[in-house]
Length: 411
Length: 85
Image (cartoon, rainbow over all chains, first blue to last red; front, top):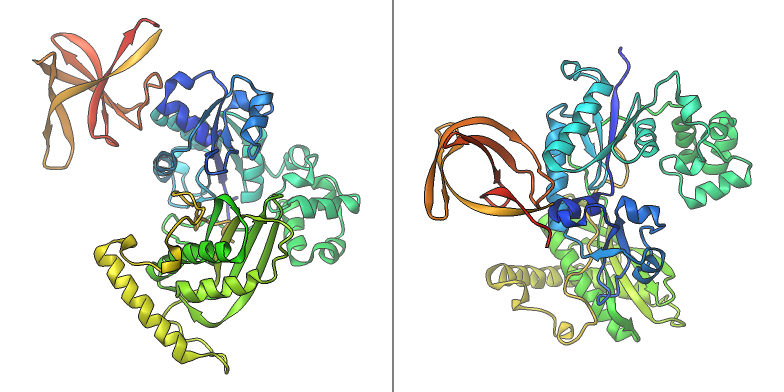
């Protein structure tokens, strides 16, 4: 069997680059795409190359970014266009292969093992790079390798507008000296644990005994060990593959801090409305609920619990989230909330009922939800709502939403 | 040098296979026949804002001109150089 040829393509400073294409007067300037200060989301979402060189980092508060880069131009996000350009870029990938796996809006893996007619993997990468630049005005960094993990490391190496090839012959020189935190799925906590054991580089991880890594990090550690040694065998999924949603969430940063349980309940109920609708649209039910609470000191606490009965009902999800909130210690006010429906399965799938679950109440609630759904479909979303959702909920109009994007690569 | 995007009124012919080609450009209310299409390619000019336009290099009254079709807005445009103000 011939060696696999995997590309990882990463659009450079994607949001900022799209803004530059739409507004060429930004060329040669430091720009940052930022959330709304009025909605208390005034952080840097993406920055241009010049802004990056000035020290501006994603997640930084706007005033801090402007201190580092006084000439920084801040622009509001245009998610509609980012989606559009992401889709246009993917159309270019499809010219070379059907095996295209997105990893967010700006990254994709491509399996070009069987795309010989377009040239060698490096030549294909070069064609992709120049085509995206010519047709869309965007630049891309591409990693070329024989597995997904190394291909991704490759695309991180040279930015912007570059190609890096990592082969079986050169990966020890190119990869093993890198910090272990560069490896896919190695976050801050895992890095810290590895560092405590004297493992600082990918090479040191690869050279460590498997039993030690397994003892330290369990099943995930075994996977990381294989990744470090270039033994990742995960496939690139076909373009038509749809990742089954494992959870659906809806979160919001409130206009003003929430100060009591009543205010929190109203926000939870509002967030659950959208969740319930999306569960219905996707024909899914949730068997659990997760609640994330960010206090005004920006600390996040998470709570989760199973539901008595699998449900799509916004009210049942909200009620479960409200019960979880009882555990919150009111030493700090609440700045942001997020409700996530977890343990998703098809609505039609039979499930084991809890002996003490109130089925009659659940069925009544379902009838109410069905009626509300029909009314909203006919007369609009705002035609009917719970009375407690009237008035000022301290919520901005354009609420955040967790996209159902693959957070884990296809295995 | 600065550039400006000039929206164009264009008459196009749509073929039975779904493709189309510009036939005539209207500028200052005057029609200009497109004698020939020399080249068609996807090309982003980067000097004006646009989304994945198709560049048509055409012959109009013996002179080569470049016009663009942007599917996103379903409009035609050309690019004009103008002095920096």
